[in-house]
Image (cartoon, rainbow, N blue to C red; front, side):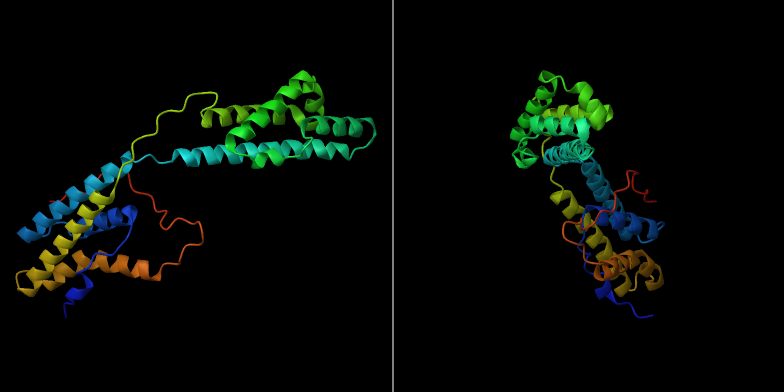
Length: 252
């Protein structure tokens, strides 16, 4: 067997999820490592990995802007569905179609162009439309033409929209940003140290190549995976793999 140190000298570049998966794989593959220096380096790998995992869990999972955009998308969809159902009733013709046309003109004189306004302006226009529903006594009519569940959902999403924008309810203070750059660097450095310790021991004849190779194999497996992985499409996350909430395996 020929030991090729170049396969293990560089830690593959990946994100937090990938690095933590690598740390977990290396610890699992290196259980019971008999080399004292290797065991010490493996303890450092686990400590750095746990620090990274703990800090990663402290990072807010969803940015405030993401929440606002999601709420904006939700209110856009319900307004569109509401207006489409009302417009569809116009096609019935007769007295019911005429009433639907009258109500549509009252509520959507400019169509749905308000959905392209800035968040706060769109919310205000939505409030104005809901106010007209009350002032024109259109509740029963809309319940018949559109459906009471649609009107209830529209009001619920409009209320949620106002809260998300901090208009009707004060926003909670944004959590402080947590940087994972340093703990990620520490985890990668610990992996690099562990690999170098094993490489040096094998090359010096202090550790069996057959024992070291499986312990270092996760490095090769990850590098191969990254090399052959499909490029993400535009807007697709680079790596959506979740981080396990479980603590890393212990080191004997």
